[in-house]
Amino acid sequence: MHHKCKGVFICIISIFMIDFFFKRKTIVVDAFTTNIHAYDMFPLQPANKFIPDWFKTLPNKYCPHRQGLLKIERSTMKGCVGFVNMYKDGFVIPMWSDLAVRTEDGGFDYQAADNITVVDSHDPEQMGNHFPELAHIKIMSPWRLREKRGVKFMYMQNPWNDPTNMMSHCTPPGIVDFKHQHTTHINMLVKKGNTFNWSAGTPMVQLVPMSEHKVKVKNHIIGPTEMMRVMTQSGFPFFVNGYVESKKARKELK
Image (tube, rainbow, N blue to C red):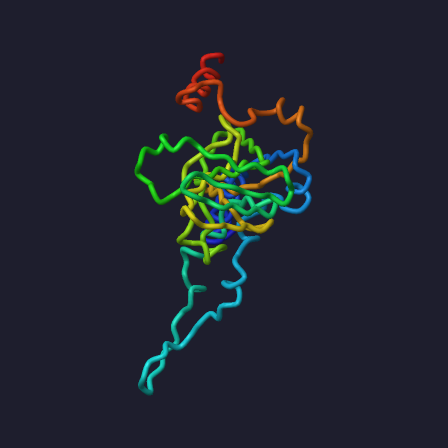
């Protein structure tokens, strides 16, 4: 074999071997629920399944409305790399039932179409007196997630999917893992004195892995007994620092 061709051949083989042995591993997230509606109609899916309809209808370019003869095309939001990339990673928890919530100074009221979804709240003292115009609500999710490696995920809102309410409610971001805890409840800060309506199927939370590996979500429907067996339900057996103390207790048993 010619020396130059031999070098090219070795290079190709080397690239193949690197790709084979260092191929991106897949992060498997198992999603469990006892809610048949959530499983059948509104399962967890990749974020690219929830690109907003208004974004899809945008043209790629537009001409600014300016006086003069020279008109130069510009990119619309379809040229925004940050927006496009956001929907390439992670997966989404959609709302599993129509839900209406009304907030007042003294609390809130709610009604869920499935008659089983619960909306709760944390004690206001947990946040001090720093958010007087906002009320806290906690939509209790029927999904429990499990991921064996302890990969961290950015837990974030999907504001572009609900632009009319973008400034009236917020799901603050956080970083979570699903090896040491499994709940996916939706904590929101909403303006007092307002009514909020979420339709079943509305993207509520996006979970973005803090990893370069691919993510695959597997949805499972199980019974209540099995749910209790495979993972914790909601909370920890400690009044203070439940997550940290539970993680420490498990580690000490090993």
